[in-house]
Image 1 (cartoon, helix red, strand yellow):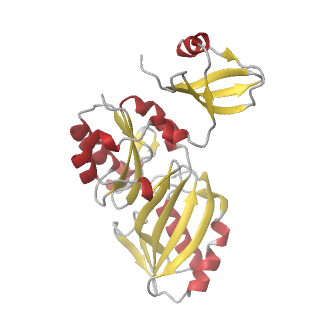
Image 2 (cartoon, one colour):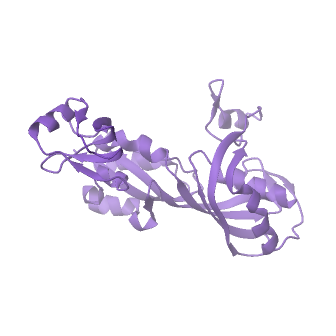
Image 3 (spheres, helix red, strand yellow):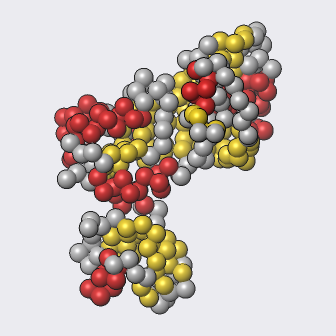
Length: 288
């Protein structure tokens, strides 16, 4: 059965779940999940987890992400991007220097009010379901972090390209909306390309057509998600047996931290935490 991670360059007008459904058919594997939703408008890096690797999805979802976002000044829409209904239009008289200066307050920890057209649930109802019925409900601000935000290009007098590296839960279209509001002329996102997620970049990405042609050979090993953590190789059958049974093991002198743990024959077993000379599994990835 196929197991591993494939980094898809998601095409426009596909949902993330559309991509997973397509890959279930191509790879003939039911257990497939993605590491962070992209709106249909968006393209770019979508890590998809296949088979046993689906156990790692939670680690991909929580990581930093990077985007190239198209900001269109002069209009406000109900979805905060140009796929929505235009609510207001304004003349645009700002310069590239004005846009660059307006980014400063949005760097670092900020508060965002989630858009109505989002999958967040309030009282069991997804916001976009309420929005489609013409309803609007109060949303509480959420804390997110914008690690990097810069102006990359001025396309014309209304359109700009921004690069944003941000935390989980950031709505880039809300960021565009809020920047437009700060500039006094409104703004909406007209394009979005994710260039990095879970440590994977566009250099790692393949198309659905590539997977259709080449299949399982494009799957990356599950441990490729954890390259930032050092390797810990178990040196005895006894230690390996304890790890496979889910028990902590004693490894005096091991520095505190997170490790990729491997069997003697270099099979990836688990992601583990070392503390005070004791190694405890965070998540197991070996088969039953």
